[in-house]
Length: 582
Image 1 (tube, helix red, strand yellow):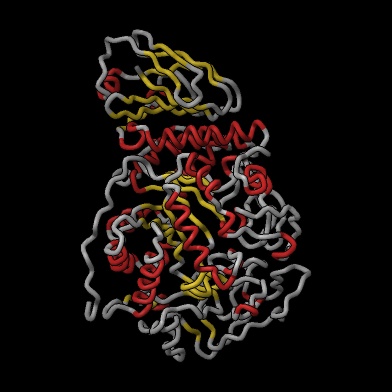
Image 2 (cartoon, helix red, strand yellow):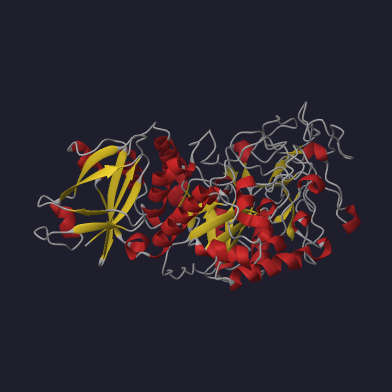
């Protein structure tokens, strides 16, 4: 490439002594103590969480779960329908905002933070910097979103550093595509708000008139090359141009380096300078892998330990985004998450798990496992399991199957069901990301800001203890952090020892030899488990020696192997064990 900035060699991260465990927080919801939950409620009616609400007590309690990283979602300034004009922040146009609190993925200033999150709006960046410091003081690292594919329709940075030109500032909007432009245009056409769009239901707002002036129209964030995107499209956003002529066979123009590349790299460096430890990159696969190959090493030259997580849903591109794109971790949604969810619902067999693992050979340590995040339905909702305990075996597999990181979403550990219609977000089992809202079961754990869980039920306290025990074990046990793996499911199903609703595998490292056993059966089962002689030898044990196995998870069960390396076990519905073989 001509005129390119020098790209340093990739500086590999030092291997940590444990597993990465991420706790995702929807920042505006996490510390909100208000319980009104009025649909389409204002910030005054429904309240909002602040940076300052995430205090040392909260962070200590999160750390005690076994967490290593906190992902603060919705930090960077995005479009909202709250009036901050007294602070010099223009009103957003309600016709291109989703919900009263707005989507955290419709960024309107990459160099600022959401004023909703500040106790003192003029000092909002300082409040976030203090949160970063508090998080680090408690031994945790900070991840924030980086949204590289699209921005809010009314993007305009009023906090950009001196000398920085705004996105689109030097664009030639008379042409549909130019590699020098930051946006894609539809010359001669004006943007049309989707017909019938009502962001606030029956309520109104000063800027709500069914119109948004944008001529020429820009292309919508999810590659909609129309001035009239549908109501279910990402019409509140516009697509960024990384030098790919999408309408002409995705022809690329990467030499010289496109202006968008430089601007977005500089944004990453800006946040890295704030001591952020990682970026969860929204819809990373909609941005050319060549950009990531170019940008990530430049950020890691500033902080070699910074991590990049790709939201990606195309398994055919996984290797490309790890090896070429240089991402540390990838979302494991369409393979492990989808499989586990269907198993919880009785729609898949446990032998499918090993197939997933085989598909991911060579990238196990890169796959980020989860059962909840802001996009997915809550486990405790009727749309997923209806009961958080039914997902225990799935969570155990997520946390122990391989060496990759694991993530949970705030409230997951106390069985938050995501119930209620918040306004823009319907009652569909998801906790809203568009509305001002309280999260009831999480609020019980929050207990008025004490973060001590005293308002939880006994069952919720037990559930949280399960998550804590599991995640701490997964984060620290050598066999789970970096050990080998042997599948036992296929051979035991073939032998008739158990059915396709039971899953078993071994993890081993040195003196730590673990047998992980999970039942997805809704009824009690009596099963046999056999460990082949070859597996015993592979773990460094003598097949002629007698062994016992003690459960590390619940500390209730102990089993002894017979001379054929087999034992019998009674399984309760949706039960799990992590046995240590001795």
